[in-house]
Image (cartoon, rainbow, N blue to C red; front, side):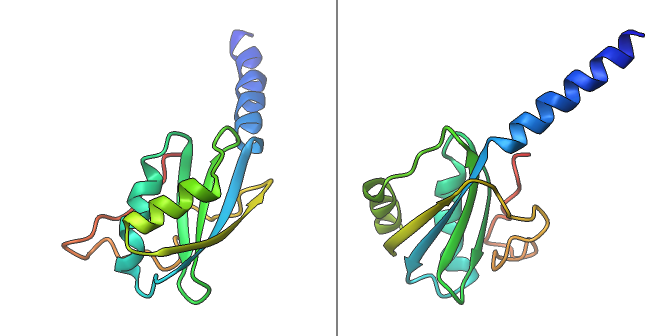
Length: 122
């Protein structure tokens, strides 16, 4: 009977945590290859509350899935990308993460010796 009581509580906590995630779609100029994106992704992943990061080189967009407590600002993102050699353009905040954990867009292949594969913190 005790096990049956814990299962619904666990389910509710898990559902609530996922529902509180937000996604930032960040437009950046200068990311032209997967290796260009890697340094910015590593910097973003170091921010507490960031769960997952993906990218789309064709649109110059980096996608960040994070806790709703994470709040990015134009000033913060401008400096972060400037430090990595890129130009921050804009961002859009969405109420729900749509990044697929198995699809990191244009992220470098884990088989590359000099690039670390980005893993999800989930």
